[in-house]
Length: 163
Image (cartoon, rainbow, N blue to C red):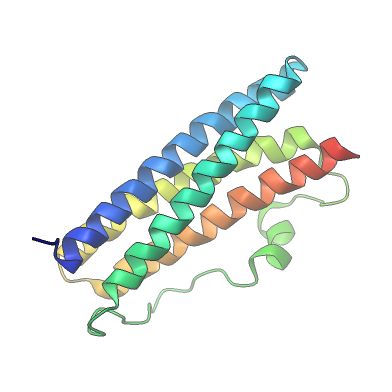
């Protein structure tokens, strides 16, 4: 017997949140290693693990979102504004000058976005449970935005290390 769409969505949201939490933990460890200036090989490995968890979280979050709009009744656009133009607005939103930011600065930013993404992933199902589908859709969109921001910072940190 298969799972209902609601249970599959909840499962995907929970898996996404867990992967966001794991990514945040790895990002924190990477940040500490880079700030101390020690063990770059180990921290690079942790950065790759964080990146993988971020990608997995993004995948599960998107699966949950796709599952929630199967019948069309839940796919209600959010009335709350969601940031758009993520990469172009990133510098303005976070006051980071992309040309001057160091790998350490980017590694400091990544975990907070993974943590925020996890929080939004955990919140979305509880809002759907009380039939607030618009707010749930907004939470899911915010989770995806923060996940992409985390990935952006990880990629930027990697660029600084390859120079």
